[in-house]
Image (cartoon, rainbow, N blue to C red; front, side, top):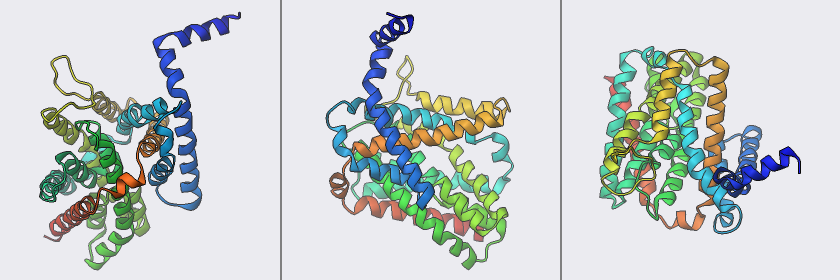
Length: 343
């Protein structure tokens, strides 16, 4: 037996090798579906995250039994957290400070108010507190990415994954609608380019739709909208940390904790470290771009895995209340920012 074969069989016998063997089939399946979703998005338009989710749901039966189950679970959890950590490569402190004081104040006020609004209205609609916070965070911060990050620190229960999938579907649909309609809003209210960019960046849910709406109007509006959106994304760290601290009192969460039981998600620490290193200029542009692209692929893979663990039947059974909540949160956020900019 050659040295290569002996090394291969030795690795396969180790715990790491056994884990890799167990997750390979499901991982490759998710990767294939993710590549298909990317192809459809690039050639026919539309959000790749939504395509990945819907394609995954269509293959729901593969997550119930068979060789792919472990790999699907790996993509839906481990790959997800790794992708969230890499999001830090998109942000530097210098970019955020360059926006000026007005966008910073608007974001620091609107994000927590939207989360709180979602929580209280959700409870009024008789929805679970976890689902209410998840919904408010997705609308208030950065759409699907925020939903994925917040879901990772909420207590796990039988409805957790179903709530996450439903939230991602709704927030993606609302973000696409906002991308088309909000440029008409800023035109109707005759906002100047800076105010228009701040409104788009502070209200549209997903980064891609913010970029699309902003640069559809002008380069100046697009730049302002993008940086305002990055400021919202940066609030993901403190918001998720606060939610993790609160949720730790509700029940068992799926995140790593410190030796004293203090909830400190590893992916959140990694996010903060990457933002700090990137802000200090220690990450080369090529490396930063690679990390951002890697983050996109990780989130696409995670959405495929999450989709495979859900079904249209389960989502339809959730009723009208979660949709009503997310529409109300979207209107609340848009109205709040618009009134602020008017006065």
